[in-house]
Length: 338
Ligand code: KG4
Ligand code: ZN
Picture 1: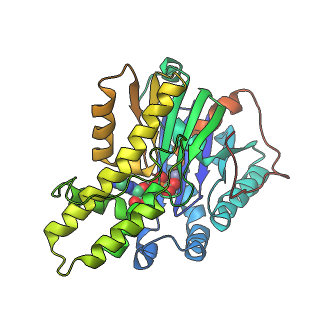
Picture 2: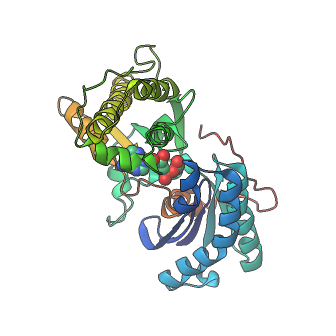
């Protein structure tokens, strides 16, 4: 079963060919980081223009690298949401056009389901997914999303909490911007934090004790801004301390709320996915906290946006021939997973 995956929900133009839901024959990602860097965040208009320019060359490379042609494919899978509407539309319209031209079935995929599915996708024996004990709680934490999802079965999800304002990765990007560090902020803040004190500044742990599984990162970012304004002479050590203390505050909330959710829903598997999952300090925070529990932590092989996770997530539905109709398939910026 060969599936071509297409992903354009934010600022990565991506295409991949995946065999049987787990063998990645190609996984091409064209990053727009340089285009958005001067603005310190993704500019939707610039993103959709770049997707338009890149989408066909990226798909062409994905097919060439996988050594397959359009006629060899069994289905085309495309992210339909959530994400930036003008970015999503480029991927969805391209997928529809190819499905029509090649006479192939099409499957719309939820981007968050792609992130969840990205766990354990690479270099694994067929059927490994069956070995992941469900139900699980998945924390998807990226530039666009911070969401706790209860994975009841593959394909059956319940959102148990999400950010009420900024996504966690977005807060990293904004903190990096206000400190003049560059874009994307996550990897830069992580690197600087290694040389800083986690308790050097006391930043808030937003809505940690509200009794729900939601998150909030906008106030934390503002607290960093006010703190930075009070500092008369910013030197490297202070920047490192701010980064380490900010990161600690953000991660404490993510880890504690995820653990509470795991306890409440009596799950034994925790899945960590999305761009921020690449952060070693977050991974270590989880590992330390989980060592006293029976929960197993599964960290994604592919944190940042890609199309292999989209082709993979479509596989169970493709097996059942549960296709969408290209006439009615549409991008939906607020697409829900449950
Ligand atoms: O999953 P992703 O590629 O795109 C979205 O769906 O948003 O995630 C990108 C986000 C950016 O906000 C970036 O700053 C953040 O993930 N990120 C990180 C790290 N690597 C990427 N945040 C913290 N630490 C990292 N190492
Ligand atoms: Zn994403």
